[in-house]
Length: 170
Image (cartoon, rainbow, N blue to C red):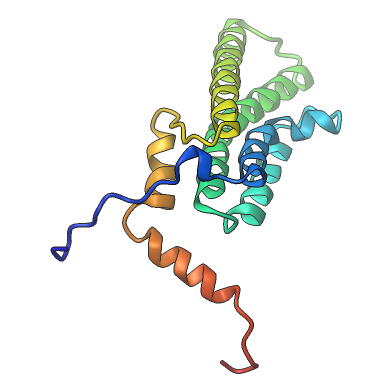
């Protein structure tokens, strides 16, 4: 191979993905419901759950890492929008300034963003269950580049080295 040119990454075939990895990849998209499962309307609990899930499962396989990272990247902007809207609501209610039309317009836009996120996550979850990589707009390319792109092999090899048992001091 010519230096500086990387061959196409070897992607796993859907039939090669074990059921456990498919389940782990699906679980990444369910982190959006983490705060709702606790009965709390706190948008940042979902981000924390997604970060923890990614941290725990990222070295399981590239397939799981891809779906976990894509789910995390998709969750961040939606949770930030939700958080901003909750803060705006609290400030408006506490300050007695009321909720004017900019708030209601923002509420509709945030609801549409949440609906789009939900639809994309369900599609990605179903594809992960079948052992397929599915790329969300923009975020899928970022997750793919990190998990399968240039330099990813070295990250995985370093990760495999850190998982081996060695005597102290080596």
